[in-house]
Structures are given as C-alpha cells and as structure tokens.
Length: 601
Image 1 (cartoon, rainbow, N blue to C red):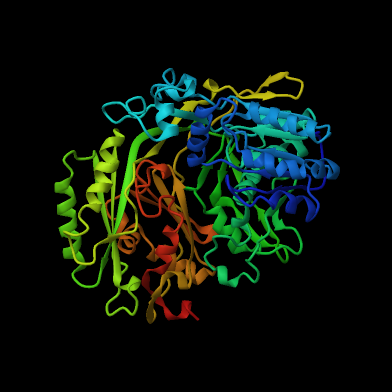
Image 2: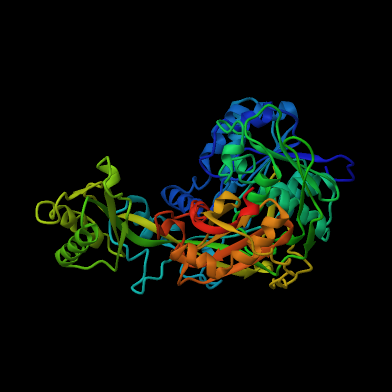
C-alpha cells in the first residue's frame, strides 16, 4: 500500500446520495477495470434522517442500502481486487463495519474491514457551544417526538424556538482513510467525511502523497467533487440534456488520478450518458461558493482548474493548485425544529387573487390558536381561456409551523376543510386533513480541527489517531480577476438565458448556489458583464431582498452566485416549493434576456 506508483489510479463511484441506483455497484464492478470503488451516501438532510433512525435503536444510524448492495457485490469486489471506500457509516461507522463483517461471515468471505470515526460531536454539543445535546441519544424526550410525530415538542425545542442538537458531525478529511488502506483494508467505512475525501483517500494512499502535497491533493479534491455525485457527471441533471445521445440509463463516473494530481474523468465503455467538458463544468459548479473550496486536507483553488477533452467520454482536469486547509472544520448541526403541516387549495378560473384573499381571511379567523408561523404562497399556474380545468387553476398553499403539534394538526387542517361550502366558488383541496409532521432545521458551525478526534480503527481493533493539519491558512476571498473587454454592442434578441448558458444549482444549509457557464469566449465576455447581482435579482425576484454574492471563474467561463437564506433553516425546513434549490438554475435559464444576435448563431 502506498509508495511510488507510475500509472494512474482508477477510482469509480457508485452512489451520489442515500437512495441512488441500487444496481450501480454491480454495474461499476462488472463494466471495466477499477482499483477502488467509492460511494457517497450522506447529505445534510440525510444526517437528520439517520439521527432519527439512531434514536429508534443505537444499532442503526448508517445507510442500510449499502449493505444490500454489498450482499450482492462483496465477493465480486474481492475477486476483482477492487477496494471499497464509503461514508455510508453515517452516524454509526463502527456499527456498519461490524455489519459488513457479519455479512462476509454469512457469505463465507474473508474481508479486512476498517472504519474511521471521531466526527460525531453530539455528546460534546454543550462543551463546543452548539447547544444542548438532544435527548434523542437516550431515547427519550425529543427522540420520541422525532420518531413518532406526536406528543409534546418541548424536549425538541425551547421556548425561544432554539432547537436542541440531534446530530453534530464534523467534516473529516482523507487521512484516516489513507491509514486504513495502508494497513490493508479491503473495505473502509467512514462517518461524516467531506464528499471528496472518499476519493482523495484512495488517491493519496495509492500514490504515497504527503500531507503537504497541496497541489496533488487539490487535484484529487477536484476529481472527487466531480464524481462524488454519481451520474451528475455523466449527463444527469445537465442543462443541455437533449444533447446527450443516451440518457435513459447513464453510467456512473470514474476518475483516473495521476501521481501529479491531474486526472481524467470518464466512464465505463458502452454505458449510457456522456462525459464532456460541459458535464464536468456543471458538476464543478455544484454547491460551491468562491474561488477557494475548502477541505480539511487542502483548499482547492477552483479558479485554477483547467478542463480539456482527452477523447470521447474523457475530460482532463489539470493545472489545479492547492493551498493549506483552514484551521477549522465545518460541523453539520441538525435539530428537530418543531412540527409543520400544509394544505393546498385549488383556485380555478376567474378572480384568482380575490378568491385567495377570501379564503386566507376565513382560515386565519377560524384558527382560534394561531400557529407560530403561517406562510401563504399563491402559485399562478392558471392560464387564460384554458382548454383543461387543470390549466385553468392556480394553487394556494398554506404552511404552518409550531413547537406544539396540536397547533398545526387537525385544528388547522380541519379548519381549512370546514370552509368547503362557505368559501370561494369551486373550493377543493389536493391534501386531505391530517396531523402535523416533525421538521428539521440545519445550521453550520465551525470548530478548531485540534478539538475533533480523527481515528482510524483497523480490523483487529487497534486505533490510530490522525493528527490535524500542521500547516493551515485562514480562508479569505480571492481578489476579483480582471474582466475581459465587453463585446461591442450588436443587435440583440430577447430569448431565454438558457439558449446559450448552462446552469447548475443546489443547497448548502439555508443558502443556495447557482453556477452559470457558457461555451465560447465571445459568450463569456457577454455573460460576465451582463449577469451581475442586480441582473440576477431582476431575473429571480425571490432573491430581491436576500444577500447575494457573485464569484467569477474565468477558466470555466462561469459566474457562481451564492444566495443566502433562500432555503430558510435548511432542506428539512422546506421553506420553498423547491426546498433543495435543484431547479433554481433551470428557472434562471428559462428567464428571457437580451442576447446579441451573433452569440445565438
């Protein structure tokens, strides 16, 4: 393990989230040669799901679908010499490691299973200033409310609305994985490491990198960021999806990572989808902020990434520069925020605004106990002179939230239904009356890296402490790059922005990012001068009153916007119609804008 290796290491991915394609592990193992197979199962929302799972039983808290995949594929991986690295351990990596050993015993296979732990900080929440540790860890109080959806929420939320912490997990880096692989592990299970770390670890172990090889590590972080979301690198969620010849069943990606940190992103021959400079660009822009993309082992300078075609379904990533990591680790804090309920009412035909106003007044008057929050949204999906009733209708959505489930349960939903014969003409609802459901809230925190244990636990039970980075560099904004000369004015045509621009968007806690890129230099000169923060706010009115930052990435011909607070208190809070902001970029692409005619040719 480790040492000098001349050829690239081939690292595949078979999962981009908890719930991804079950068959992907077998497809990746049988489709071509690999050295390592990785899987990313964790997201901020997933950590809340696993925390509630663990509250039901301390033996749970990991991604159980990984075991289903492994039952089918463990023997195949061992036979082919493919080592597996996954963060499916979630909140219980030791438990998943034991479950893998039990599976191997049932299958009569000999396998070396190691795991990485230390990220789980929930028992130290008070000490680290995150808020009170949740009673969920003991199976009482908030845990019962979290798992059953009934009962008082006082254990989950204080009188001020500040939720107690149900899960607190620091984002660890790759060196615990490296330790496990260097000791001979066939399967390495982790908890909350960064998404890219499951790729960085195998690359660093294979090539014998040192902890100060920042450019090499940053190159692996870039490759890891591209492939960790699975088929998003091979045409999934891709703006120009109609250009992909076979997207019915896209293959999963792999990275050939060289000793200098450069890489080629590709996929197995004969699989669906495509790997192009544009599909890789789109994924590089996913859920990032500015030119510096921090990881616990190195900070990737996104503004140095160079992409080039290396043949059909092959894209080279080169020129990547890295810096020392920041001194602090990000911590994902998930809490039970209270209870929520919603009713969606259908308004058809004429006088939509007046109908909405009437039923709003009626329902608010009928609520003798007002919920802590009552949020109304009118979606004008109706069309004039529509030829179907559905296209003649708008949707009025009322969402209520409260620490007390009684205030958002039947009192609310039944009050809405009781208006059926006494409100606007054509009253009906798409949602039946029912009780409120638990909702979660997410918030990030930061903690000094030396306060977080990082431990590799080998198959024989021996433990190796992983020291924090010896050299660090505080994150700071990069000086804005010089902009190209704006193109000379020409005749323009008003068309959707997406006629020439691609976009990808996603969630980061309560914020969202929208990365927008174009494909030619003349288009880039127009985009960077046209798509400003003010123009974004004009095109996306929801952002008008929110903090928005723009980051310019000339190497990718891209601008990346970070929109704070658009997702409220995170995905589980469900603050908007699209709670993960996955469609935000496509909304932006659909908005019309004046584009020079010569750029549309």
